[in-house]
Image 1 (cartoon, rainbow, N blue to C red):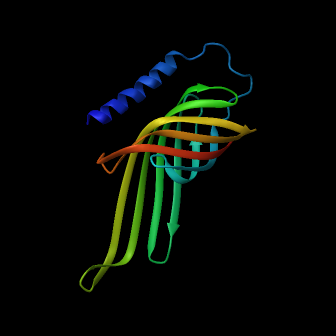
Image 2 (image 1 turned 90 degrees about the horizontal axis):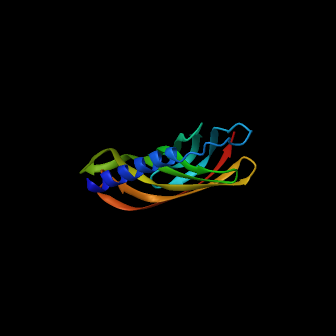
Length: 169
C-alpha cells in the first residue's frame, strides 16, 4: 500500500509542480492540435489502435485491440491519463497513469471429466511513469514511455515500457 501511495504522491506532485512552473509567455501563434490517432504498445497503457484527446495540459488515451478466433477471443483495452510537463515544437515530456485490462476467453475448454465450458482469464495492469513524444515529421509523432507497472491487484511490481506512433490532427 505504501508503494501505491508513493506513486500517487509522485504523480500529483509532478502535475502540480508543472502547472506552477508554466511559462507565462505567449506560445506559438498556431493553434495546438488536440487529437492523435495511431498505435501503441505498453504494459500499462494498452496494446493496439490508440486514440488520444489532448487539448491542453491534461489528456486521455484509449487503446483497443481484439483478436477473435474460432474457439477463443482476446481483448486488450487501455485507458490512460496524460499530463504535459514540458512541450516544445519538436519534443514533449509528459507523465502518465495507465490502466490496461486483458481478457482471454476460451470456449470449449475441458473443465472436469466430460464437462466443457468457457474459461475467462482477466489480467489488470496499473502503471505510472514518464513519456517522451518526438515530432518526426509534420503531424507524425513517436512516443517512448517508461515507468513502473503493478499487475493483478498489485501482486507484482515491475518496470513498464511502451512505444507508440501517432498522427496528430
